[in-house]
Amino acid sequence: MMVLLHWCLLWLLFPLSSRTQKLPTRDEELFQMQIRDKAFFHDSSVIPDGAEISSYLFRDTPKRYFFVVEEDNTPLSVTVTPCDAPLEWKLSLQELPEDTSGEGSGDLEPLEQQKQQIINEEGTELFSYKGNDVEYFISSSSPSGLYQLDLLSTEKDTHFKIYATTTPESDQPYPELPYDPRVDVTSLGRTTVTLAWKPSPTASLLKQPIQYCVVINKEHNFKSLCAVEAKLSADDTFMMAPKPGLDFSPFDFAHFGFPSDNSGKERGFQAKPSPKLGRHVYSRPKVDIQKICIGNKNIFTVSDLKPDTQYYFDVFVVNINSNMSTAYVGTFARTKEEAKQKTVELKDGKVTDVFVKRKGAKILRFAPVSSHQKVTFFIHSCLDAVQIQVRRDGKLLLSQNVEGIRQFQLRGKPKAKYLIRLKGNKKGASMLKILATTRPTKQSFPSLPEDTRIKAFDKLRTCSSATVAWLGTQERNKFCIYKKEVDDNYNEDQKKREQNQCLGPDIRKKSEKVLCKYFHSQNLQKAVTTETIKGLQPGKSYLLDVYVIGHGGHSVKYQSKVVKTRKFC
Image 1 (cartoon, rainbow, N blue to C red):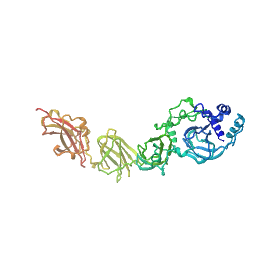
Image 2 (spheres, rainbow, N blue to C red):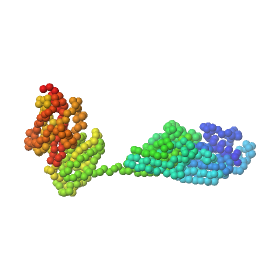
Image 3 (cartoon, one colour):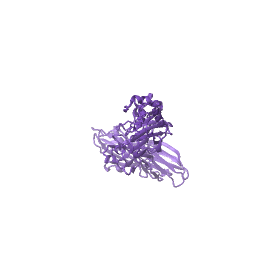
Image 4 (cartoon, rainbow, N blue to C red):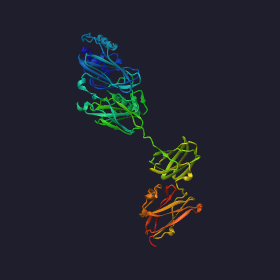
């Protein structure tokens, strides 16, 4: 019986002899003569005992493997790992003849008949499975014989892994899972998810080196790391598939792009093979999947996720020595939504302060309580320009950039609601004041001239005084002027930092105040005032600021001006 098993094994390994080591035979010359039907052997392989192999399946093209058990009552374990598509597979035991004819005399006919009998008979089916789970057959006591493994992919071309052993207890190639193999979500944020899982006994009890790999994607959980690697390779040329019937070694996997045993590489696929090795190049679109190996830590925070998005999380424990892996029970979670932007309610005739982050935005709402013919918006951008959009009942009425103080008057509508969107610029944060009113005659913002500069008269400078002038308006307003001594190297950049026009005189020191006064003129050509600032030190520089204060107390600062007194008089 064992002699026949050895003959069977040699028949099946013959096509591999040119690329793998030859197994010893009793009569190699006689064995070579007995091989006649090569087609059968080209599509068959023998599974080595205790080594994981990878191979490839074309859709609807079955593949057959054999495994030899030499003695009765032998433990047997066979594991099949689908790597990109569901598989159909079954394991059968061949019923072999009890004795052989010819009694070693070299008579070829009985041996040919026995071989044909092995090929034609289906054998006794021991186990079958259909799906994409990592599934296994295990028996503590198996009879001797030739075990046949048939595989089929009806969905698409795919690859897979097989591991068979007669010493499953001592091998333990796949890392063990803890009694609770689930991956738990311990913390959930808008862009982060923290995962935790119980450690594998392989590291603690068996003292074998392991690492954990975390896989994140938006489609589904994965049953095996093999399936993950197939997805990760989708942005490259996936695989040069061998021709059906091509005489190649199933152990020479690197030629066909299968994972190598190099555990140092996160992506275990070899470089793109030469097109001569196969007939097809499988190009796939890029996939949104991430694999991160984190060593032996059993807690990990995934970051840079998108808010309000569902993600699937898988954890695989990998034996660093063998590069074989086991999947935990994956999980999924939806990240939290972005914090809903709070809408600021504007009250009719009341100034509201608004801060907008750099590149940020703010939403404001104005809903007049009474019917109105017109609505007026006063916008005071304190620093850099800000973009404003105004919609009435969803319809866009206004979209402009605002710098300084601007006034917009829009036609009203009964029971209308206005939505104002303020968008900051790329330079920096924006500060502004906004007022919405249906009664513009009672507005709190002071009216401003088009030119808000302060003019200094050089010829009127003395060692202790400086004379300046600024424009006013037809409306009577209160103006206050302040001074502050600055260094001689006070430059435009420093002055720009103090150009927050929304900061009023209330933040200034009392010692800096020069005076306050009212003025206006119906004739805009004459709406100008001058003031001489006294008590200055010779040869010193002073920063001068003019504030105009409206009826509602809101103030606006003119553009600052630096003057320098004469050093010698």
